[in-house]
Length: 534
Image (tube, rainbow, N blue to C red; front, side, top):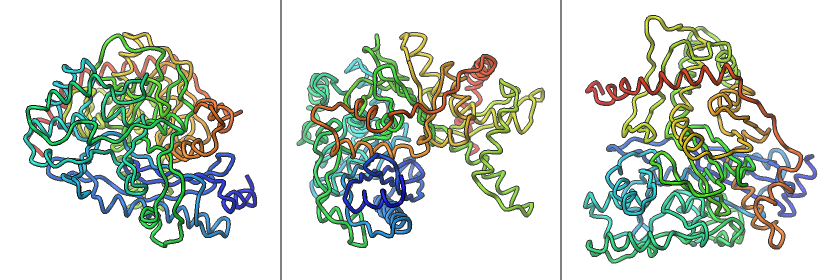
């Protein structure tokens, strides 16, 4: 779209804005009436490890939201010579799961416990047995029950438990609601009623009744909404929180806040049955929309939903590109020490492409990118490791290939269960996120890792912020009775199939050899975690 058309969409309020809180970056994307990105902004941030908890400060949440919004508004002004005072619709997304309990005064009772924490093992096991349903450690209900088991003082004062994006949405609108995709990462969902599973709700209330808390489960949880439902409007107070310049007007309709898994499905047009997407950034997860329920619960597989409420199997790994990025920064330091100017895009591209020159099995090298614990392989803490034997082929190409391979190692453990034990079928798998920015590299490695064709669209780099902008657009632009998948097919992705790479048989074989080494070497990672060096 040309500058004049985009400017007209802004002036006529035919836009939608999506803001997503990623692990290391908060991104804002503005789309026009064709659902194409026309402006963006971002704010870099990082979680902290405080007293054994991965967390973000509340002040940093608001500073980041305001920073990403202002960066986007500045982009609008620079490109189109327009002061942004309104948008047609707005949506907030964030990293899923975690634990943010508030009291009646709206005060956070304990520091935000993010998805990255593996500290709820006892609660997870007991709830899984109670529900006969997998309850991952990072789910909100696992955090709540673990706090109860730990006899934490704050539990009796809880008035509201929420996730990051639902917290921000609450403060912007006054509404205590959650999109069904992330609600499914708080507590099991009944895909027929599109609500929390009532049988399990009653079991949980009975379980905690002896503690005598003044609340019941539904009292303290956000209301579940599906894509396209009314989630409130930006209030005067919310507008001032979002835009510190005071130019943004209240009254903007807001879509249900969604988790990054759901926005990733939308951004890759992967909300239909037998479609799937892989989001690879700080964490990595594969979502596959199922034809039917799995035969039994698996600890390695999360059962969540699309933003429309259809059942999804998620193979989620806590760790992906953090260690890889750290190694790339070492190469940056080296180049700068040699007096070279470093273009980070070129550096990433050069190193990623170098990986494709390596041996298909990584040359006998081994890496674990475990910055944090990894539930897929049974670790409550992580230690990034690079290991080799004297016989390994230690070259730059093999080094980079191994560090790319390990990004997908833990996720592959979960996918094996779906493909081999449950015979799950996938017609189309799409990749998005930082791992796929260098054309053809991450995409080919993923195709080899899952032994299936992988597509990447030109919009893959826009990621979840674009996905939540599309959900905001769906809220105000859908026709009567129009489903989310129809809206995406006809009004967003029509004619855009992306580029597809098929698995290379030699690459498949090489990745399988690497995976054998990866699983045999987990004892090395265990020894590193249990050592008293750190």
